[in-house]
Every structure is written in C-alpha cells, then in structure tokens.
Amino acid sequence: MKVNTKLVYAGIGIIALLVLLLYFAVPMQDRVFVLFDDVAELMAFILATVFLAIASNYVLGLEKKSITLMSIGFGFWTLGQLVWTIFDFTHPIAYIPNPYFSDIGFVSFYIFVIYGFFVLVQHYSHFISKRQWIIALITFVVLTGIALPLVFIPALRSTDLTLLEKLITIMYPIFDIVIVSSLTIISNLTAGGEIGQAWVLTGAGFFILTWADLVFTYPTTSQLGSMYVINKFGVLWTLAGLVIMAGSVKYIEAHL
Image 1 (cartoon, one colour):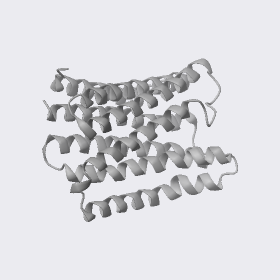
Image 2 (cartoon, one colour):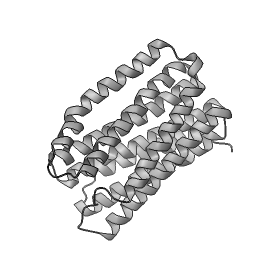
Image 3 (cartoon, helix red, strand yellow):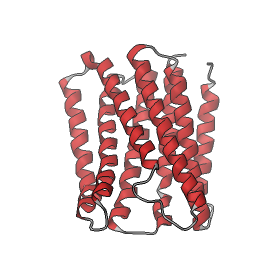
Image 4 (cartoon, helix red, strand yellow):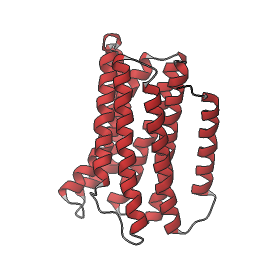
C-alpha cells in the first residue's frame, strides 16, 4: 500500500492543532466536553491502530510480528475506548464504574504491546549492550520513583478503593513504565536514520501516554478536582495516539 507520508504528516499536524484549540480555546459545557474528549481519544487510537497495521506490511520476521502485535494492542484500546464512549453517551450523569468492561480492552492493549516490545527486544538482543540495559533500568527506577507519590502510595492508602480498583490503578502506570523503559533500548540501538526517528516518535507517544495515566490517576486517588478538570488531561491520550501514529508513518517512510 502506497502512503503519501507528507500528506499524512500534514493531516496529523492539522488534527493536533484542532484538538488543542477545541480542548483549551473553545468553551464547552461539561457534558459536551466529556463527549468530545471521548471521541477525540477514540479517533486518535483508531488512526494509530490503522497506521501500525500498515507499517507491519513493510517489514518481515520478528519486526513484522512485533508491530502487528502492537497494532492488535491498539485495536483493543480502541475497543475499550469505544465501550467507554458508549457509556458516556448513554449515561449522561453517572461516572463510569471502576473497573468496567472497557478495562478488558485497556488491559489487552498492554498485554499485546508489551509482548510486541518483548519480540522486538528479542530481535535486537545480540546488539544490546550492558550500558543500554542499565539505561533502561535507570529509566524504570526513575519513572517508578515519580509514580510512587503520584499514584502508588495514594492508591494503596485509599480507603475508598477496593482491592481490585487499587490493583488496576497501580497496574496501568507500571505497564506504561515497562514500555517506556524498553523503548530506551530500541531508540538507542536504532539512533540515527529514519528508523531511529520512528522509534523516538513512538517513544515520545508512549511517554505522553505514561504521563496521561499518572496525571489522571493522581487526582482520582487523591480526590482532587472535578471530572471536568480531570478530563482536560484527556488531551494527553489524544496527543499520544497522534504521536504514535506519526512514529508509524516515519517507520513506513524509512522502508519506502
């Protein structure tokens, strides 16, 4: 499938600009904003899913398997977000239960994406140095240290969350940190050239996704802010999807 990457980049830029304007410059009622937030995130992850699937057609072997797994993972996130969006549309007042059916899609996303990165690390295993493993470990430790006061400790101390809710609250940021840490290895190995740029963009997208989970979870566990304020951070998930899509486009461009 031939892809006009310049046209796609222009489309990503226009969409990102419109999304930022709608999130922060256009006044909306709380209800309207929540629904817009849901749809924006859904759109971004659909695009990421599609372009990861397209990118998988440009490589073979373990690389193809890895990117295909990631695409499947994003497809599951899309399904989870669709369930979330349907709930918001059909329940104007109620908050989405935690956990909810949408979490099946979100958990499946992490299973497939982490497996995809495991396959990719396996593909590059002969080229990974001790220094790169140490950098990945330091990244994991630093991000975990940041997450401790923001998510882990508040969640564990919370008297309002059930054991299952605490597990889910802690699980998502841990999965994010594992992905970002593994991406430091891939980015270092492919540094320089378009493939390296593709993984840097992808890593940036997952880093934004990590912050989205941390920033959303902190006011949830500490009971700070209204849902409207919390949903303002939904722009991070939307931007994460668009940046990962851009990484996929760059990956395609590297193989044209």
